[in-house]
Image (cartoon, protein in one colour):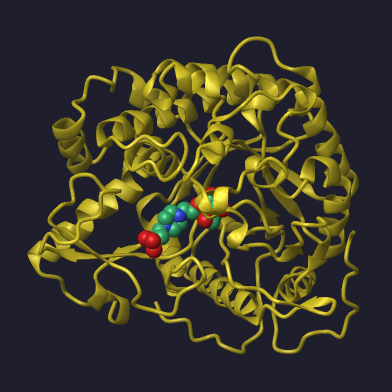
Length: 479
Ligand code: GBH
């Protein structure tokens, strides 16, 4: 796909959902308040050497105390939707049993504040902060965690279901399983490919069981959010029509199965792809996949949430260096810096988003699509009262053009949520990587909308992109 729309005015469909996203551990802080129990990210971030410079989420962006200011910012930006996650350890401090009312109270206050500001709440139930007590019982390698999760989902829906329309079950099971249990750069810090495949299946089961519980309780819209990416060879980056050798085609297919179809196929078709089953069988055995699991996992859902950052570039052998985060790909070569990158080192390839959306439309036509995350970290500089993050605006604009190109070819894309509303705790990178469209000073917690936020406000107001921007006042910082 080429995006030949540079500089053109582009209108998005009526009712397109413009918004931004965050996650509980990355912004809330207040880790000891109102009965919250410890999560695996508290344990992991406090363990020496796991997060850059020993940063933790203890205070993060202090959103727990500043949610009213943050909602005011959202209203001023004109956001139609705000995707946040509920911290399971606030609701069930030890991972099971009766809900902690004070934990639910916080999310109820947040939801009411959002509704009063005319911002629709989009709730993610799991964004990686597993109660530590459940990890002590095996975490996601323990099948029982999936059943505990469905109970927790039910408890949250019971309190918020009359006000929240859109529910996202599990965020990025690939990351939770393969970075958390496969190579251990995320919590809980285990490094076992076998555990990763078990965790992966149980996260999918948690999705299915919770989707079923939410549906029975009357939830309006249910989604699964995945980190998805087109898998291509270096040659295909420049020439998408390139005909691959049989070896390269097999390498591309195998990695696509591990990264994308390992989750898409069970959730949307009720089966694992054969190359995944072959690898799982070799590494972990298939004993953890029980009869009936795929029926549970393939509960009908309304939306597929797509988190897109960068493509995945591979070619067949030679086997050095292999990528341990994809077990079973020792003979495949992964490439890194083939395009300009963000501060994360991730190549910037907007056409990857249109390719991905078009592929999903072709292969999984029944499900509506929503970009639940897209964004970039850059080394922002505060100049007086402004952050001139032209690189982030360019990133977002080029990806919106890509999204629009996919809509033109028939993709049912319902909305776009920027990652992230606020600078926040970027997992293993701590506070060194800033993804926000709103700058946060982590000494004072002052919020300052970046130029990208002002640009986004304009996009939302126009319901699209246009050449000329209105002259409008900047937004005041919030101290
Ligand atoms: C998301 O994960 C998370 O949901 C969010 O919490 C997080 O803050 C945000 O993104 C930014 O990191 O092959 O080295 O070029 C992102 C998942 C998985 C995206 C790995 C990029 C490949 C990078 N990521 N991926 S690379």
